[in-house]
Image (cartoon, rainbow, N blue to C red; front, side, top):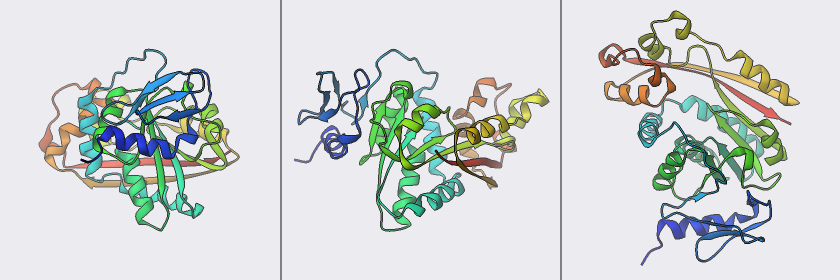
Length: 285
């Protein structure tokens, strides 16, 4: 009889338990044979049957539900973000070694999985990947869909990881916590933050918003703040307008906060392409 998803996940987490630190007392943690995670002070966190651990120490309701994460997975699976993955992997290949990577705000995990696959296909090195998100529904979906990775519900302000645990921290279209990134990153590690640029999903904004001011926006301040945090920074802009299959339009609309400001039902027939316009910001402390 084969292992359950929970047992397989416990085994994988056990191989990498040296990165774990109790979010309550910061003591070392171990993954037991009974598929629980326990620290020296006996604080205990159970693996769920799907294969993730909930490290939340306080209630934190999320506005993101399972429908949004399902839509997000469908869109990401169509490879609209392949140029982003190529740019990130090109940077990671400079390390020429096995990497341990944390995706902060990982959602349902699809971006992290694509990056891991691209990294391992591009050379001979492995990526040991962990994803953390405050939204439980995202982590449940990630654990259901993707094995051989570490999935955690948790708050970056009280993250369950030791100092200097990661070679790379990914922060894709998600809020940053730079002081925590600095704590978690190895001395030669890198933070990769992906920020939407002015043309990102502009075709959707044209349909969603009557107000012209909302059809355009700038994240220049976000990029400038990123630059202020690091000694060494590069920014690569990725822009591509890609064909969009009609059946994907509702999912694309539903996976973004734009959907919360929708003025009317989106016209699928009038949306046959979409623009991916991103800044990939790479920083070293």
